[in-house]
Length: 191
Image (cartoon, rainbow, N blue to C red; front, side):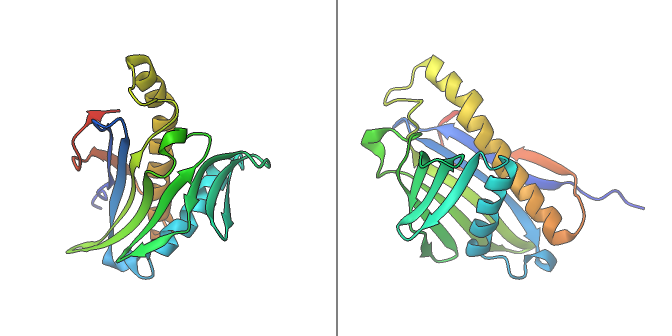
């Protein structure tokens, strides 16, 4: 019996020249598994996964004005997003504030969920771009970059990679071996 190929999850996290963060994680789902997978589906599953993965320490809250990631049961919002906007096959949540965002950069950055047809299936992607974390500051020092890399960046990568692995497992009905591969989508300093 042949050994199944590992499910590849492509990942890139970089610090861009303007001191913002770019991060993308993606995988290709075969056509057989892709039925019904939309950007809205990805967002719904991701919000549920965040709550589950963090044991409700981080609680996504959907409100008429957008989505907030709150700490525990408090009103402390770690990151706020405006109402999701559909752009083709992509659902975009623009950052609008929160404790983890530089105050002067609150209207900058976005998290997007994309579904893109491919020859062998669909590519599902989670992309964070133009995000300005408070911990990095406007001109990140080596210490700030190191701290961000081992805290927020590491958690974001872990959550998104595991989310995509869980999504594959949920759609296929079996656990797959996952292989994280390096993506090269945008230039910048690796985080």
